[in-house]
Length: 433
Image 1 (spheres, one colour):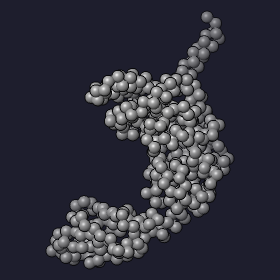
Image 2 (image 1 turned 180 degrees about the horizontal axis):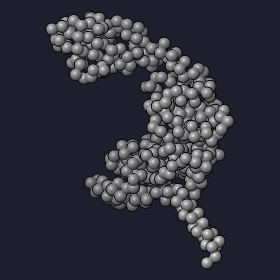
Image 3 (image 1 turned 30 degrees about the vertical axis):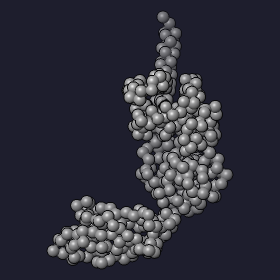
Image 4 (image 1 turned 60 degrees about the vertical axis):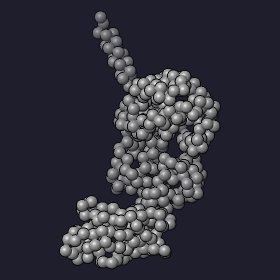
């Protein structure tokens, strides 16, 4: 055989093999199993048999994707069964969309290829289409993208009037099935990112990186209402974000929950992160490097997080300056009775301990915790705990034993009316013989 011809054949086979290996992997057998289980469940009124069918035909046959989404969202068989039984019109309306999910694969695959071109270090992830219990449209576990099809494959024809009120706005404000390719690219990026740190700015960046880069590489506009609202009302949103930035209780006003402040738009943290990433990308001379830096950002590296945020000048001051401003606004413990902190000769016995704050504290958040020495050095605290009428003092009763070293941490769960938290205060003392 001609050597040149043989070389062409081998090269073609090699290229074909590479193309096959690089093709995106999709798994949607959980959808097929769900409908088999659904039909069987609805053919009987015997609740015990219904649960047995759910387990046998759906959960036990589940792919790694279904097992993972159940684990990540802590779904229970009871939740699955309640959603199945109570929403027949919903299921009937969404069923055709779920059964044509394979028709969506080419566009999703095309978008993932665009992501790989922009970020050559992309590691492969498997995309699983499952049916969950209405608490996520898309999430990840390890290198698995997990799509909740009961949310993400809906469209404007999906009947939602049986669903509880808290769940309906998602379907009303978005057209999920049209957003599937972008959602899959967004979640794919999450599988490449480093572990998230639980503070508000990092949470915003984590989601902002995935949303901005998925939009940038695919050329598609974000369907998240928060992005459009944030750009239209930037100053109002940024000012409110700054006021909430170091108040951990407000995270769900910004991420993954219902916004209960005056802005009334959920997930505005996606906008904050998106805007930071967009500005950082636009300011960067090396665009490929910017994408790599954003995807590979180490959220435990505070200096790098600060550098990226501060570079964009979205916030009115640097993160360090904003944190210093916040620290100066925090209330403190200014007095302790009936003994001085650090005393070495505290009288043992049942003792009422009062702490005095520099400013009034709301009376529905308190916090006592172990000190650095741990539980062994924490006294028995009685249940009666009382705020002073003006909110500037708080009294609790401790049963303290002789010849002991005690620590009681007054935690930052105490806070002012505006949510600004108390600077933690460690009570450290020893008792006399």
